[in-house]
Length: 467
Image (cartoon, rainbow, N blue to C red; front, side, top):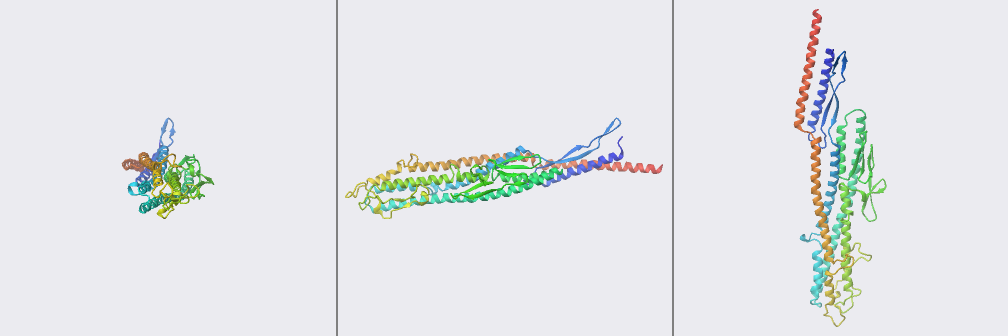
């Protein structure tokens, strides 16, 4: 049958196991407010039994392991949610800046300058010989050109900010992947030595969540405890204890591109703020596309006005063949919005007449110039300048509205996922308080067993001496 020594050994093992469980509980309570901490539980196992004759005796309990509680599926969901949230936040931030450049209610944009410009020609048609009306046309043209210049400058500033933000995001990504690779080694070493890697895994998961906010990642966990991370399109970021840096370089267009091991991956990157910056800059409704639309509008308006201007006769009775109203780029629409300006400085140069002298009061060309407002202009897809611009502004507004709705929805998704993660991995102080009482009671009981065995052994020794 079991001996007093065996019973004492069982009680001592129980003391050790319960002491370890109390330490785990204490650690949970201490980290209740630590971001990313996953609660730990003490896993008890019965010690192997021994058999004496027909009797089988238990050999007590062991603290088999300390296990971190986490759900890998939920963890991946949080990472993916943060990647989508990061992208929409970065995209919306830039697109809000674009929209502000065309806020007619606050005096920005081109709607009023365009309408006033063509209205000035309409006014001139009432009295083509009036110098003040001719000067008003020049002033309206200068205001329109200035509006194009300002809008183009604003878009260029947003684009420049994005080109600065991309390398900054890449630098943060590289720093995080380096730390994750280092933790991979520490997790692997702890796992191989039988130590508990739970807190190391928490640190690594916290870094991966930060990384997901910067760029979308695919996450694969190996049997040795390490993770392999790639971008959403498969560019390697971390494998084992080695990290693979992304790099950036400025291309001939002046835009910053992202490279992975020498390959340009810019257009393949999605998720996180880096994906949002690239989408805002290069997307079909992004800043570069807005610049191109604005350039085309400036070039089409300028070209149409110049073409009609040169068909008429100026205030001096000369055919205005070599008197364009606007100065435009010589080789197409590129940079037209940034560089457009009024070429004429003398009001008499405006070709208001469609007839040669002596018909100096003829207003035919002034009316033709005014009527350009409602005509489909080349390069605008069969639209007038006003309708083309209205559609452009509406598209920007739609993008901002959709991104705002997506941001709201994504914030809710991330919050729900984080709540779900907290319900699984988070520390409940009520639960830990109950565990504390349970383990304390078990420890006290085991200590009582030790005392009882000690008393029995002392009694046996005394009896032996009395014999």
